[in-house]
Image 1 (cartoon, rainbow, N blue to C red):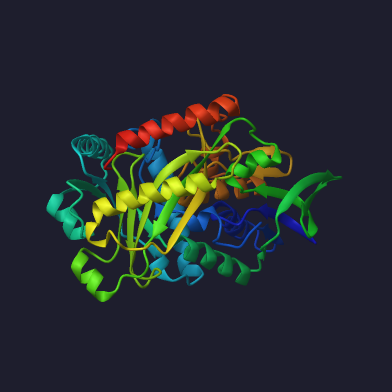
Image 2 (cartoon, one colour):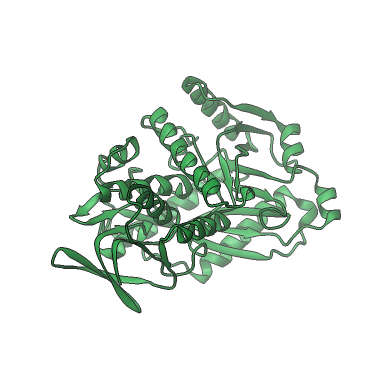
Length: 412
């Protein structure tokens, strides 16, 4: 087929790019090529935190090292972009819950992290609330936490439902979304590009790469991207007796005060059933493939973390257990640039896919249309990702470092 724009990758970034393209060029033919199914890749596998505030995973307490007011403003533009899509495409509002989030703290070091972060937020003029142990138990039904830091601006997504809703709305707007259409190459053909997929090709004037870490698979930023897998598990639906015995509220999201700690969420019937989701453990895999050993080790670690928080459910069998691929750069920058004439990227989300993916997707679309905004001006002028050590050293050294960080996080 032929198209004005071919977007490779149908996650947060790719669908944001397609929506922005449709806004900028209402009559353009836009094709999104997704290797799998919408919502079954990293966008549907993440914890669903669309965060507005500075959230640097490499920091001891998330405090940013750049212009935090600017990044907060950009993040809120991404959230507003998502909210408008929810309204325009009639996405279930349960999938876009403006509930805020809590940094949970179990130990003294984590409480100190929260206190430092609270000072940082106060200096920015941002609202927050410090929670004590009783308030944390009233929220979560768990006596594990000694304190928390609540901030109101985070949106809690049902991530697969949200991206599937985006895709359905875009299709009604005339965007063609082709699932199970893995792209293996794109080559120059005169003034156009030929995007080659497994079962066909697209001739297009502009290629937009929104493939996060698979940017390297297309020969771009090679040797500059860190590929991590994070792991999660989900309980079966809790029955009425279990809900009553646990207590707590029906919806909440907790990020750990130590970035290498454990993320927890509770969802209700409007988001996929009354369930608890646990996310912990990280492994560096430069080859972008996880292993059976990784899955088994993460399952044991998550079980320990869950049982710490909910000992009354220690014999509960988990219903789901999965891994998700994310991509970071050593210096925390994204890759949203014009790679060469007619080829644009919106990649490298640094573990902040819901928000950063939306921003880089918007940037790629605006670059392809020759439009400038505060969002695209920020990302297109970011410096390049730092070069990494060789994979042989990176895999061993990086994973030892991650294990040390996770050991330090312990109960967090």
